[in-house]
Length: 213
Image (tube, rainbow, N blue to C red):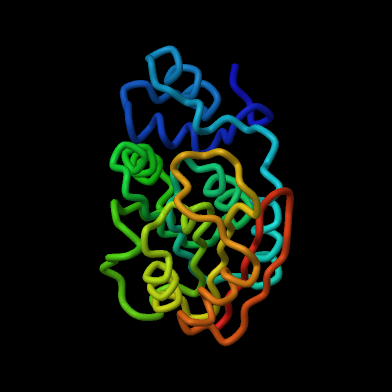
């Protein structure tokens, strides 16, 4: 039987409820087991060691105590599931350009995680209002973009208090990465986008940027 030592059980069970309500059972662990037996792929919910950069960002958020949050490029949830677990009352809007990834997040939301609001959306062309979110996280995204300056401006437009970004600090061989930032270039990116203060820290081959308004 599944247990929360091996996966993010609450969110895996919500996914099963949202994707295959016919497989729902009396408890979360049984629901997850039935979902797996029914052919659902539950690997996005595997509870592996939390990445150092994810721990660092969650530590920053502990200090800032966000009231609402936009997560840009949520992907398969490497940051999203620890975030939702750590802040059980926090409303989180998650955006990603990949419909297949958002289908998983939509199933989780529809399966009972009502404070999660997923959207298929590009950070460079959002439909949100100015200052709609208390904070914005944009993790492992900027290095993929042709126009990171536009993404930084848009993230700051949407945030009331702060934008938190992470990027690689050294070459990692990923062919999808189109640029490598330095501390100076990442600072300049957010200063030019309108941040009042930019703080950069390092954690295991990555930089964490906190840009405040």
